[in-house]
Length: 448
Image (tube, one colour):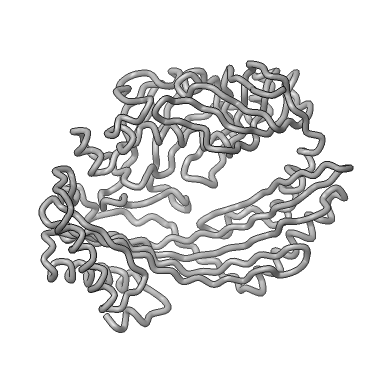
């Protein structure tokens, strides 16, 4: 154990041994069962701004969550120190909590037959052989390219490059210990444009498991410039009801609210507008939504969920009808159902798309609003009320006419989902939810 505590570089075997030691300690202190989540991350990030290096940060983090059970009473503790005395202290704290909590008949480990003892290997680890010096040079080149591209770009909020390698692990006292590696790399560029007295800010970024899939820095710079200068001259709109296109990166959040509404915690608390909707239409009949957890080089992939249950492809929407809720072991028990291996969320959620790109959707819409950024958190999953600040572009004749700002878009999620016209083929793969731009046939725009 002391040897593990001194390590700077971890292997799968080291992480497995660490989990086993913690589980043994929980048993030694009297727990009837226990589970452990481990995340060990190592990497660095740098940031430059206006030609100067602002930050260089190395990180090596260890996050360990321990849950112990005394029958159906549970207690949890977390730690980052993996010395034996720290582990003993954390386990003792979890045990003390468990001894004084009320029993919960739904708590406990997943049934043994559900655990991912033969979990698949997914290619998710692609270290970036990048030195800090090289990262700084790349960031300076990205920023320099952006500042030189358009004279209206007068300032920068910085270019950031980050890289990390991590081990993700879960184990429990039923004999299951699973560990797999993941890498994550990111480039981002934030710019400020000025025209007269007006200033606008926007950004571009690229993120991937495999550095070879990152957008080249020259393109990140060009995208950031284009996004920023096109916001100049923004106007407000009069209050109206019009069709709305959510650009792909904002459409992702729209589907995220759907997942929140079918998630177990919202359902067993009776805090979802989709309560009792299983087997009922939620989207139009041309919409299907499914998750694909085993995609290589995808940040949303995982061989098992936070309960140690083996992930699997799930279909949530078929022909517009809700097929499954999004459940982990605890919420499934509360609802009298079976887990869908979604403790911790979905893994690569896809919505079926049509043949049109964003421009094609704008032509279909003809007249309305293209939303490119949303602000605020005005979404109520209980009622389905949706109201958020937005910026974007006014569209007429299927063409962008001018940028708009300081508006609010509002509606009911049930109506928004039911009135989904089309999904574009411009799929944004950067998040766990993979979707193209989404056209809705009517929303309220609150402006002047």
